[in-house]
Image (cartoon, rainbow, N blue to C red; front, side, top):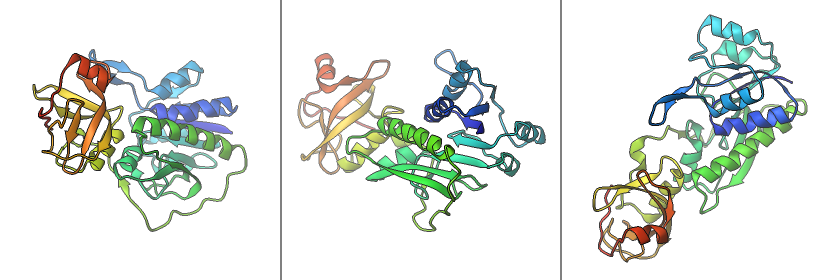
Length: 303
């Protein structure tokens, strides 16, 4: 296959690496332009661009594909197929139609559940027991295309977004290589029932509201770990990220420590905080955290 690959983050880089290893001719790689990052706000290339350049592949980073010039340049590549994974730009119809076999998208959910930007986090937040990868033929809608393949993955009770991301990235890479190794399977329309939308995560969603059920907060913690990290304020006003916690059958005033071991009362039950990170510090387990800072029973935590 003569392939155009379109993607930006680590999730997409896994599939690009798999296509290269499988021997496909990657004629061009499209990725989001370098963005300012870090304290110095230096321009940082995307993981996909870095990987492509390591393999000597031509990289294009347009800010849009809406212009006739951008669309003509895309069509001129003469690709058999385009593979898209978390690219971040809308593909206009001329782009979708340019490759001989169209554009395939690697989406991190069991469509039609969790169409949109943040399917991994939304699945954990909702308490879904399973998710997976859908390979679909792209159309002009938001993740509405017909499906070529769906594969399920159980969401473990302790699995956070980082672990689920890595598992789904590996699954997507495997599936796209498998699909391109044979004539494309027939595409099946998505079901009309069960459609949900995975809206982009807002910063406000990471703040912990201790009045909520401990089970809800525990899912919030896993959904935002390792980044951006669910957070609360300690008694001294310092922000504390909570990266892992366990539900405990105890009760008390929400947001108040019930013991000296970082067990914090919630609206229903409590959470024992097991992995924490203070601003500018490394993440550490509860025992190491408490060696550096005592948190006695009665200490209050706030959102």
